[in-house]
Length: 125
Image 1 (cartoon, rainbow, N blue to C red):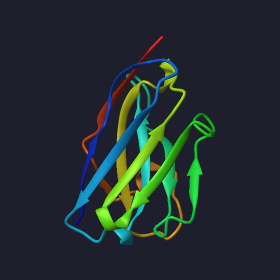
Image 2: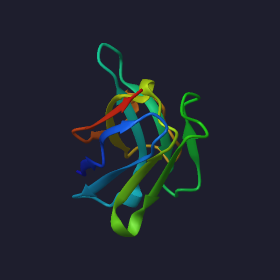
Image 3: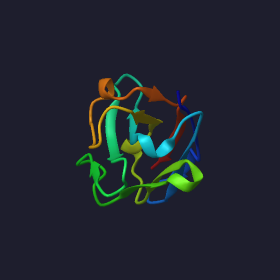
Image 4: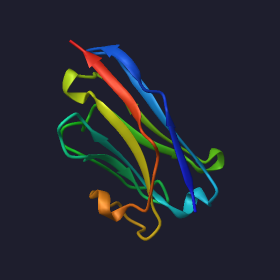
């Protein structure tokens, strides 16, 4: 069973960049597809980005396409989400998640088996 710990959140101004990291332990990281989700106050958790086990495929929500980049470094058991041109509407708790069942990319939270505790991202206008 893999454990996930996010880091890198914080308070930034609109237009700034942040890089979130997800450190995995307790499992073979390369065996999991990985995703990032976010949840804003009063809203449902939503898919942000996903990357396949091989790292060869990525998928983004329309709201972040062109601004966010997901990547993984299996040698370091780490996944990353590079966020640029941040907007106030990006404010949320960001979660990384691991999917042990699929080689491709799932975009619904029920498809992921393991979750981190989340890291807060706040973008001020």
